Each structure stands twice: as C-alpha cells, then as structure tokens.
Amino acid sequence: MMEKTFVMIKPDAVKRRLIGEIIQRFEKRGLQIVAMKMVDVDKELAKKHYAEHKDKPFFKDLIKYITSSPVVVLVLKGKNCISVVRKMVGATDPKEAESGTIRGDFALEIGRNIIHASDSPESAEREIKLFFKNSEIFEYNMPDADIIY
Ligand code: RTP
Ligand code: MG
Image 1: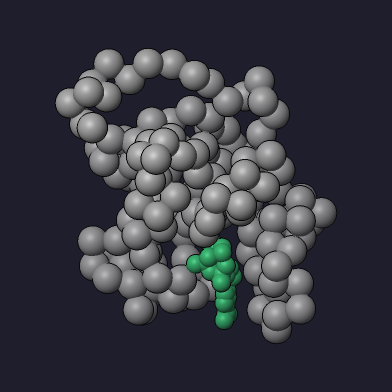
Image 2: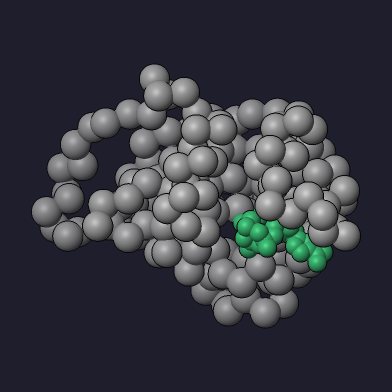
C-alpha cells in the first residue's frame, strides 16, 4: 500500500551534522521525499507533537530537547513506508536498537535518539498536518518506481 510518513531529524542529529547521512539512507532505500524543511519547533508545537506523552515523567525533558535547536522535517512516500521507516529508525532506546538501524548506528541515549518517525497511519496523518501545509507537499514522478516496485 502506498503510504506517506512523517520524519523529524532531531536537534542532536542536526548539531552532529548527520542530516545528510540520515536522508541518504531513506533515498537509497527507494523512498521518495515529497516534503522537507528546517524548522524551529516552539514549545507549543512540541507539546502538540508529543501530546500522547504529556503525563509521562520524561515529558518536560523531551520538550526541552526537541526545542533546543532547529530540526529537519520530512514527508516520505513509498509502499508500506510507515512500518519500513520505523524499522530503519530502530528501537526507541538506542542501546536496544540493532546495528544497521539509524538509532543503532548513531545514538546511545533514549533522551538523545536523533530521529522521530510516525508509528501508525493515524499519527502519520496527524503529524504531517501539524508540520506541513498542503502546498508544501509535492507530487512528482519517480522514474525508477517500476524498477523499485
Ligand atoms: P518518537 O516518537 O520520537 O519517534 O520515538 P518512539 O516512537 O520510538 O518512542 P515514544 O515512546 O513515542 O517516545 C517519544 C520520545 O520520548 C523520549 N523518551 N524518553 N527517558 C525516557 O524514558 C524516554 N522515553 C521516551 C525519546 O526521545 C522518544 O523518542
Ligand atoms: Mg513515538
């Protein structure tokens, strides 16, 4: 099934100059970038994005972390890309994440786990709407689509 998912390259990855490395993995996999920008996440937006965690003990630190520098946000498109991208990202706690996953290769701390990806079709839809206007999401042909799929 053709899907869209939302990805955020978090402040620690931006500061560590990992933006290109991370995006390259998604491109090489065959996923299509249909939206992308750098944004400052203010507290209000951060709280909306992570609303499901508002009562968790780590919520305050999470908001501080995610607002600590600009982030890069993307919409990726591809077959089954919501679960494919979650697999590429790896376990929430980088010390449990397999090598070969983004967190497993580049991170060590749960509170500094470098990337976010939507966990379901519902959250993908909600998160894409939260960060992008319709006019910022593009439709264009991927000439090699029939080779990839
Ligand atoms: P994300 O939403 O960022 O993609 O991460 P996730 O689905 O893998 O994990 P989730 O349970 O949604 O947690 C959201 C983010 O909160 C931080 N966290 N800290 N200190 C802690 O125990 C703890 N637990 C979660 C992480 O930054 C996690 O990505
Ligand atoms: Mg999550």
